[in-house]
Image (cartoon, rainbow over all chains, first blue to last red; front, side, top):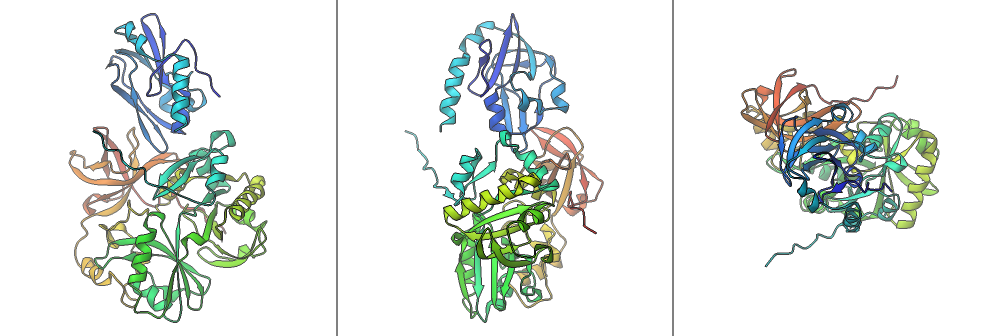
Length: 130
Length: 382
């Protein structure tokens, strides 16, 4: 059972965000990688792209399915994890260590509306029991 | 007010509890709740399952497949009337790929016809089309002297697929498996069960067997577990529908509702070699004769993505100017080939091997090359 880092925030669409001052890294949760299965493709926006909280900013594809990525916050992409272009399976191996994009935050207050690790864990426990 | 849609009741195979116990991810497919993949923790996941079948052996529960038996003095004439391949060429113990057609030459379903005995044939049909197929077969064979039985619920069907399938299954049966050629069948004792149908068939573009055992839960679970246990030395893994789909895509084996359907005909689907126009008359023949005289409107091609992206079912195919010319019937990664591949219908003018087309992926045109199919052919043994 992977634990959900307490210093991350989470979305109900299964992204995590790790804030650090006015920047943050964003990835998908261990629950997301488990649900998707073998990840074979990550489509991330280029550096400089503006992302908007709640809107899609890219996608992750497993062998079987395409899954949209939803921005936890608004901001500007500063860096894309290039490693995932050739080795997307890293997300399966270490979802919380494999960031997809880095962003500068437009409004750090947006973080307050996201789920804490404890809340997210509760949320996926309920979702998983359906 | 909101309308609450009733959850359709999904049917379960006799191995449902076993799959759940193994931690399989279960999904609805053709009215059935089926395992799509088994957990990474036991060495599975679609890619590992796919690779096991290509390089070793994988075990599938395919009990959702249906079975129709035609037996009696008129059985051959009935099978000939409702299917496009020539069943008169089958020796006892032989099987063939075929299809049931509508009068307009499109598909009711594709089937494997097994000749079990002198006047005894077994059609293995798709899960999602079971009832439709059975009704079709019954209604269109009334004039023949043969009994038509729907045996779908009588069998748990387990597929053992891969280059090591023969070694695995041989440990569990007294039947002389090396003597059974591809697309032939035999009967033998399997896991202590007498007179089990063992067919050297499959849907993976690999060597393998499909066995038909009694469908009670206890027997099904026992045999499933014994196969997995016997397969340990060959690295056998349980495989779900996810790997079944990627395996059949690499091998260009058609899937009903995708490459074949009630709106696509035999020539479009490129299944000419399984359609024997010279045999006795059969349902769909007249329409196919007529269609043959006219130019094809579309044809099934293989695409390999050369741009960055994965073509998926129903994505649009564009020509180089961006005009929509066709659609993807099945697309995704080919785990063994390590390429993103797709099958698509396009007008024949665009079917030339080596030419470049585009697939529309989330609004972007991504380049793909027309390549020969099947994408994968298993190495022939010397």
